[in-house]
Length: 193
Image (tube, rainbow, N blue to C red; front, side):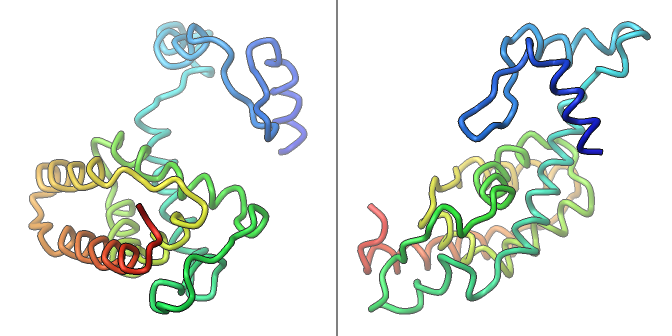
């Protein structure tokens, strides 16, 4: 529950910093090392142990689901790439919920850490690339920063082919095609430099 989380964070306060937005951040690398490496080595510490691979997979899937479920035509910051007259709209910071901002900013980072993506993650990625990618590009152009496409393409090429034996040419071509189309429109309209 939220009360349990608040109580736990209060107890951990000496080990955490609070960011500008009130989010907890680990104070020292040794605390991270304890959670990720040493906590799993002793029975009395195991309940503190954090498996980064598992957490990255969970966060990647949560980010993909958030983007796929929230982005739609008419969402603030979408629809302008089809209208040469419109230009990039001003999007208030309050128009985009915090969890969507996080998902837009970090989905690629969590995904590329995922060495063994689940079927559900692959389906969510296909959905994003085939149905939501242009919307994602439009919104991230408005609120920034843009993701690292090279990391994503490399991960798709290597991880999905090796792990699943898939011919991912179609998936990559959809991604590259939508990126190129958006980039061409953006350059023509003076959106991106």
